[in-house]
Picture 1 (cartoon, rainbow, N blue to C red):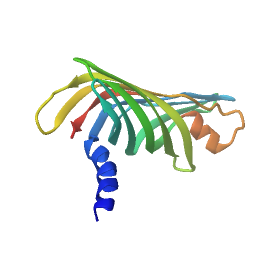
Picture 2: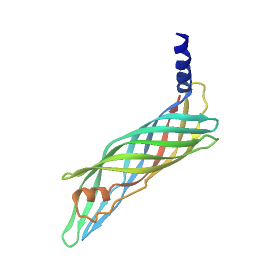
Picture 3: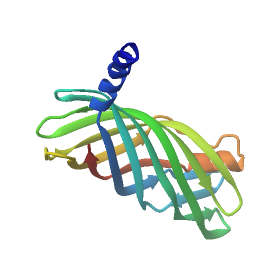
Picture 4: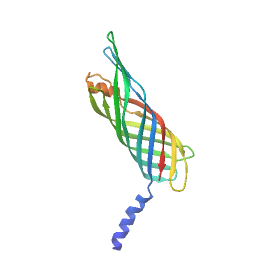
Length: 193
């Protein structure tokens, strides 16, 4: 029994020392414009909310490295489509995503962080839907409040995709991807425990 106890303690102690994070992002998401062969589409910016869970792999002094997982439910924006010489129409553009990534935070008076994540984005219109997987970069700055049990935090966050697509093929799925979100900016807050 003693031989089993030591390996169990050696594995459990570092895991118990790690910290968890649960947070919510609330902000504006903007989209790319679509311009191909006389068809122009613009999509209105949309307020989005998403949740994120983080697990710290390293938490030494002011430095913290964590893995993250997030989810943004589907939101619906209005797209205005103009056909040269034929008029204008509107339609719904829907998107949502799940994500996994890594984040480095430097915890000072004003905490700053940078990270990357892979987002699997579900994009839809009334006639077409597709999934678009691509990497995003996230930057944030904010304040953490060192309370005894949980550590609330709040800050500003900006996220941008590291890749984007133009609709050179002319396919409906590529058109959706070419109009995919191009930036998110807003407030991110939550607790660490």
